[in-house]
Image (cartoon, rainbow over all chains, first blue to last red; front, side, top):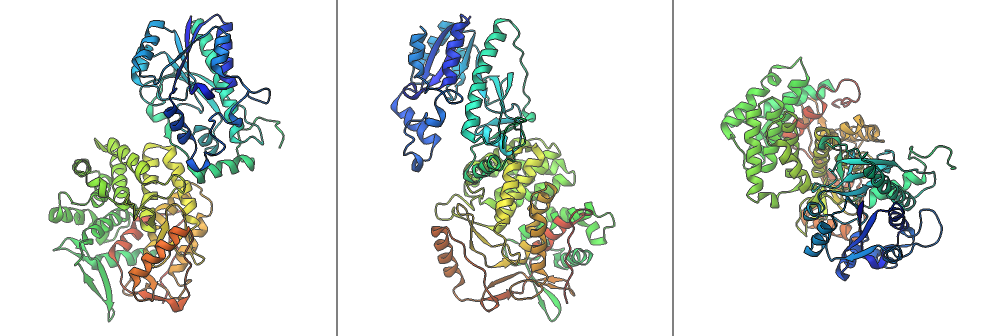
Length: 261
Length: 370
């Protein structure tokens, strides 16, 4: 079996959940490539601007800030993913964009059985075509109900259970077949950064479960209907504060039973 | 409630001109009699608005009186004189809602095509929030009756409102996209925007629009004055009242209800109290201790406004000042205010629209004061 892991911004790519995906794919004997996009300096600047308003940029020049790094709960800081890949004997390919001819050629000649998108990048249709529509991505919310962006916060605001959904990516945003749902535990006292970290861990577990199901021929596809969900957009400051309040005051009702106040 | 409702119908009956097929723009009381003025381009807009209110009252009140019973024929008369299409995008939106509501899918389809033509002609670039909100409202009404093309147009228009008008940080929407005007929005446009969000959320079961509606209402409630006044001008990013005056009675008795009554149905906190305050301002618990309602012949004064000269320049200066400083402008005592004693037909149209048929739950609780 062959797999490609898509990632982005290699200079700051230090995430424990990605490391886990690479290691566990190797452990399963799956031939794996690590494919990087978003490698030019301008890509880093664009991404930094997208993530944080310029005024907040100070102290956040590294996109993978302290709260985003490392394993899911404590432990040592994660290593650069490209270094991990080289240690594991995984070939690392860097491209400027996922639509580049070199990138498409790499994908189509490798003939992967599955591609896991851990890049948080928009995957263009040409890439999906080259990959024979086998790109699977983890979405940090319960599909089909919550599509779009900022879905961890929207899940809290709407008081919906926290779930990571894996879908087969399609050209239409968040409308792919759902292949797995992984519940995410939320505990009293968690903040958004902590919940996001758990979502990343759940996303990694989901990718590995999808690989296993694919290997055993047991991967089930659940088709989405547009009317079964809503697309959400970036949440502004007022609602972000409301979400922080909900967590702080313990008003999110889908917390794990027995977690301390 | 009955008096206010019945009074609104009688007022509109008197304001209707069969030959012009219009409700008046403005009405004055002279020696106890109505004096109607039809000489303003917005008369057409007020008429569509009032027709929508009459239609709602007729549909919701089975004991309809003769004037209400004629609501359909008034709409036909309006279309025969002014139709089949109107030049304004927002007016066309409300007309679409009226036609879709009465089950005239052919008529509604023609209006949707007209809206699409107006949008394609580039006029959409110059529209203000109120017009886009009314357009979306009409398209939602048509989508509920499965009028062809309505859903696609509604989704496209919602995307435009979200991308170009909504300030996602404050949850207020901009009056327009002009760099000099985009920082301020009126209460009226905000009421229509919230209503459009409600219509969109209900029609397409859209939870994002629903969240914008609920929390947009929450933010708007925070603007209500100590006596229940709804301020006129609002800073979009500061979410502060940059100029509360004039305080309009139409905001107090009906336009605020376009979003408050649906918010009650959704269980948004604080709405009941806001409605009580809003209505009590109208009946005399206000800065001047004056009831805005004349019982016979039925009449509602339009507003309290600043008793100052150079209204416009000082308003602009005040608005710019508070917008830049992100502060709010306060309410005045009786010495600083005067009453605008005209009445506009669309106010009573909205009264009929929002309050008709509300049995159980919240109903209009104001009575005319003597």
